[in-house]
View 1 (cartoon, one colour):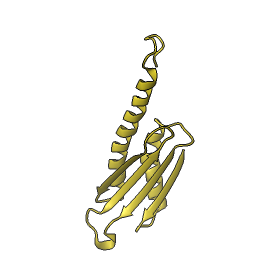
View 2 (tube, rainbow, N blue to C red):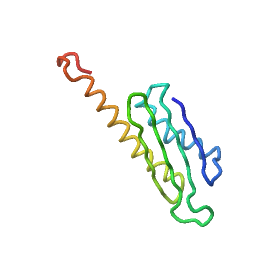
View 3 (cartoon, rainbow, N blue to C red):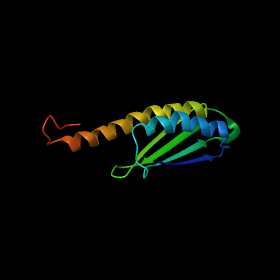
Length: 114
């Protein structure tokens, strides 16, 4: 799995990069085991130094044979935005992969299904 991470209008610190890997990439990796999968993470500070609810995490997942999945969440801190993105992304990826498994097992005898 290829992970692309970038910061827009903010410095992508080691702690922020580690947090994103641990709380966003690793939970999704349980559902995706393909080396051709690409996860693009953009962490954006919308208003810059003005403050407010302006930390945004944008994630795009591209898996072979699937439509791209794009999730965007905004919160007060980047850590909260990453957590909110993970929750939505995990549900979406899980649902997408399960649909593919269900479709591939249709038409098989009951004793052969996955």
